Amino acid sequence: SLGTETYWSANGVSGSSQFAASIQSSLVSEIGRPNRGVKTADFRVIKNTRITAALVECVFVSNPDEANLLKDDGFLNKIANGLFNGISNYARNITPTPGNSIANGNYKATKVLVNIDEPTNSQTIGGNFELKGWAVEQSGINSPEITAVHVYDGPAAGAGNLIGIATYGIARPDVASSFGKSNFTNCGFQLLINCNALSKGTHVIHVYAHNEQLGWDYSTVKVNVVNDGSGTQVTQQTVDTPTQGSTNPVVTNNVSTSEESSTNTNYATSGTKKVLISVDNPKNGQNVSGTFELTGW
Image (cartoon, rainbow, N blue to C red; front, side, top):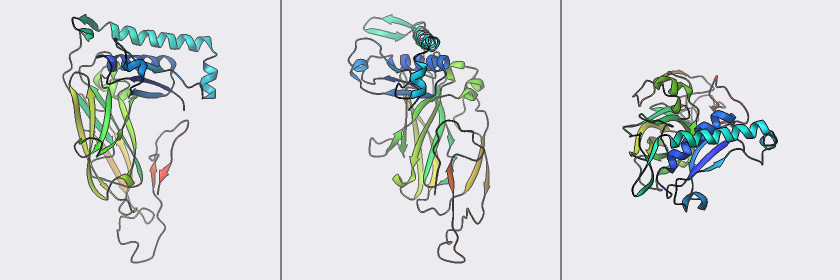
């Protein structure tokens, strides 16, 4: 493992989610390590407190490269600066109020925006696929002001149809540029989903994003799940820069079919039999670095 992540407790003191998001954003910007996102956990050191709290994992000492970085005084100074800036940015936008140790004085949430980039609406999928997108609270000051992203098979109904909790806090400079708000830079989310956990047929995936003031809001995408390898398509996607206020991505699809990627569902029972190979991830033309997962069928 490698990179930077920050935890807050949903059962802790109010304001902890925004505190964690502010620190994560500033620290990643300062030290430049991979962004592992803002996460929730009930660690005692952040749950059983009387003040706003966050647990920061700056880097992994179990990773040889990052362990060596910790021997560099210059890198340690960058960590200190990142932590200081994150705490300062948060503190500048809060004021104490009676009965509440910390409360946002200058920030009032207005609307949660959730955008799903991949998969696209009505896309046929099989094997493992990656759900990607971004989520922000449009009036956010210190950060995107999103504390968690949960993914469900249909409307949220508890653990019974929860697909997973997405990694949140991935760099999306395109979104920040579109909104003209640098604090939206780390607003991306992603979740690797195994189609074998879903029944064959049409599913409406619900992606819920949480803001501490407004609660949960969501966006949906309809997909056709094919667990037996039939009916899949090789799709190349280009995603345009999102526009402010938009909750739907602008996506251009170029779909190609061939004998190696057939959409004929009768291929197994008639005609000349073929070997079919489909690469799900990475996408065609996608930039990759470090360790990445190649999946397909």
